[in-house]
Length: 241
Image (cartoon, rainbow, N blue to C red):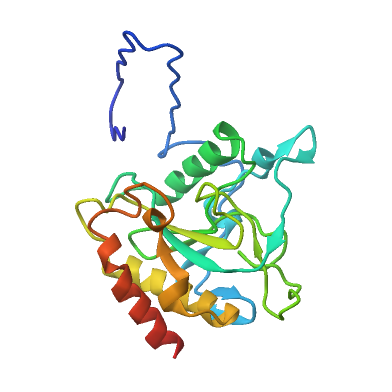
């Protein structure tokens, strides 16, 4: 339930055992480090995408979420890239503080879900800003710097499609696209990021780019947007080609 500007709420759990409430403050939640400035491009594997880009320091990631008694909860594990999956976060549209929302998702995934970090590799807001997701253990977002046996850069394993995470890059658009479409600038940034990764990994965009619902029963990435993924694949193919 998204309750922007709500002063309070009541929950009735009549007849339901073990009710639990998780509250995510996306507006004034904690950010322990001052935000770093945004970059004008995303650089991965020696290639660049011309998008406004915030690394983890830029959106205020709390590195302590990934530690338990000084040990990493989910250490980076690198696997070959096989697919790229598009999500929506199903949160509010016209978000006044998308960086705060990214921090809230980070807390929910890392602490409440116990994953040690955010489950997505990258997130994109309605203004087209790209946010670095799961820590890759290197200076390169998403990918490792040491090529695998086939010469391609491996990805850091994450958590965004239950049972199908290995080799699957997760990119999430902030917002709910069940009844509306992403903004043009958000879609443009999505295309740029997908094209960057497709080019690096030498994958066929028509086969490799999928929506969350293509893996399991879910509405993600939204009933309005999912049918347009075919057009996104075409845009990526033209950009790479």
